[in-house]
Image (cartoon, rainbow, N blue to C red; front, side, top):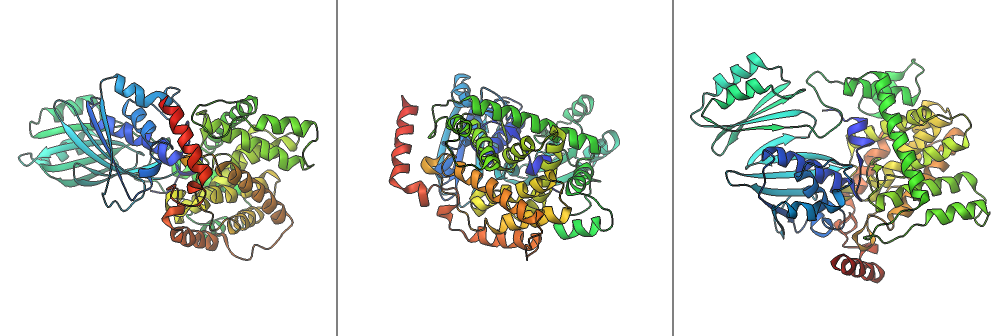
Length: 523
């Protein structure tokens, strides 16, 4: 299914240090909860010792997200930070194991869930930016991305499969029905835009040869459908599509997302405008001051604001405002406040922080204007995710902050009313400057050097936007840079892809901070 700006690029709205850990884990947990009919007594969570989660599941929010999702929390629940304690207080027994599993994907979650009457096993992967895929249920390969209502029928060998399918076809409008071999018979997977009606579920329950019927709710904001299509998938296709139409990049983004989400152009703009307002509120709260116990850096951006006023920092007014807003968003993220993954939580600040700083410098700029710029940046993100990844675990920090820089550069040109070609040139140059960026978080927290890399991504974007507006030549095409970015990222050693096994992650200062924070959390 084609990527969506609101699913894959700018979103989710969330709490937590990492979208690929926390937001994704919440979504996996919610699907697992539905699979267990909201009745869970025991949970075994397993992480591959050779994957990224073995070293980061605790400090970057995987456990917190999973437990929250298993209790039905959403990505902005204010009780999420207490989820590991809360789930145990309900009587649910939780065990976490790190073992050799040979999982091919670095962000693989294995769950074994049971109650007094049933047990199910779920294998899922986090693919970056909060996006997920359920790849196996009860040893049956399957694909659930959370973009449909899903009904799962576990039928035994005695069941008349054709009669069951005829009943569904005759009484329910669904997008797709898939049949899988299950260890006790067959697993029928039904994808639909709406949940199956209760009366149909009851009629299916009367078939004694159906072992389980499971209703799985979607976890993404934009649903998929059998007739969904998009006008283009990469930059060159977009340019061909736009030839002679005199459309700005944000207008092309609106056309893309409107077709992808089967929603009106105005709804696309309204959704992004709401995201802009959420981010504005988070920036204000970040500047005012934040606190959180499990944190390396305290409140710093307030000091920067004061020094800007007293002119105790170098005179670079727009750059300083960008640094202030980016810092405020990163501080909100580190204190479990509400952020928007753009394209990830670890890179949440560069795109919206820089757009809002520039909007403040341009008189008369509205929230809707910023939303249009964010949509333009989001379309660059679509081209990246179609060819590469936003997961640092797969391609280093160039996949996160590098992508955010390219998106921000295009958005800035849009705010300056530059042309579509100039916006593309800005994104191209910003991505060129980001190749090879590693992910080596200090003390296993998404703070250092993440704050600096978000600032760098935003300032790089500003420079590239100005160069593009002055018609600097990017030399290569955007599609070529994204291709190169993916090749480079896949070759970055595992130690430098968010595993906390190399670089700054293993310096003595990092180890000292990690030990101190661990001791504080045990008190």
